[in-house]
Length: 356
Ligand SMILES: *Cc1c(COP(=O)(O)O)cnc(C)c1O
Image 1 (spheres, rainbow, N blue to C red):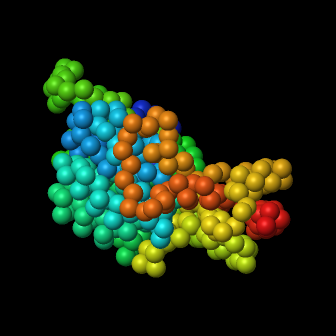
Image 2 (cartoon, helix red, strand yellow):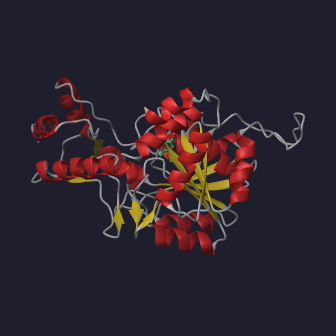
Image 3 (cartoon, rainbow, N blue to C red):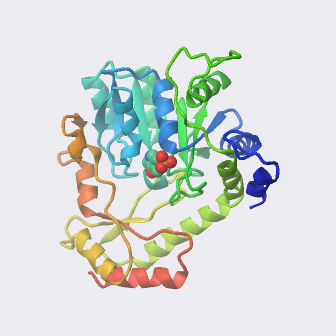
C-alpha cells in the first residue's frame, strides 16, 4: 500500500515511473546483480520479447518444453516460428536432456531452446546448458512459476541468455498481472524496452523504423510488485511447508510428490501427486471426489504435443512410452495456496486418502 500510495501521492499513474525502476533494481538485487531487468505487462509479453531478441523468424524451429502452460510456447507462433516439443525426464518433470540431444540430431539447425521450470522445480540445468552450448543455441528460460527457485545456489531465470518471470495472480508473488524480462546486457534490455514502448526511435517526433508493442508495466502495478517482493521469502517458506505436509500426509499411499534434484531448491509453487503405475486409481476420480468435498484440484498441464492446436508439431522422446503422457495420465495438482490453513490442508489430505 505504501508503494502504491506513493504513486498516487506523486500523481504518477502512467506506465513507467519510479516504482518500475525500483522494482527492476530490487528484482535484480534478488536474482543476480549481473543481470538486467525490464518490467512488462505480463510474463507472456516478456516471453514474446525474448523470442524476438533471440531472432526467431518465420519457419525457424524452436525446441520447447512440452509439459507446460501454453503461454510458454505461444509466442513462438507470434513470430512464425515452429515449436518442436521435447519430452520430460522423471526426476524433475522438466525437459529431458537426452531427448533434447535427440531433437538437435533431428533438427541440427535449431538455434533456440525454450525451457520451462515446471511448477517451480528447476530443470537439469548443467546438462541443458551444456547441450545448448554444444549446438550454439540460445536458451530462453521460462521461470514464470520458478521465481526464487535455485539450482546449485543460482536463481532460476538467470541461466539462459534470456529469463522470464510472471507476476500473474496465481504466481508466488503477484502484481495482479505483470511480468519481467531478464537479460545479460543493458543493450538487450534497452532494445526490449524500445519494442515494448511501440518501438519509438529517439527523435523529437514519433519516428518508427520497426514494429513495436504496448507491453509496459504501469507504475501503480510495479508498486504492488515492490511490496510483494518483500514477502517472497515468507511465501517460499509457506509453499515448502505445504509440500512437506502433503508428503507426510500422503505417506503410505501409492503416490509420490512432484520430484526435484538434491542440488536444487524449488519454490514449491505447486504441490502435485503422481499415482503409481500399478495402482488402478484414476486421478480424475480423485479430482471428482475432492470436488464433491468442495476442494479444487486440477490435472497436470496437458502436454503441448497432445493439444489440438499443435497437432502438426513434432514431438521428440527417447522413452518407449512418452514420460509426459504418463505424468499427465497419473498426476494431479493439489491445492497449494499459501492462505490455506493447516486444518484446511488436513481436510484435503483426508479427502485424498479416502480415494485409496
Ligand atoms: C503463468 C505462466 C506464464 C504466463 O505468464 P503471464 O504473466 O500470465 O502472461 C508463462 N509460462 C508459465 C509456465 C506460466 O505458468
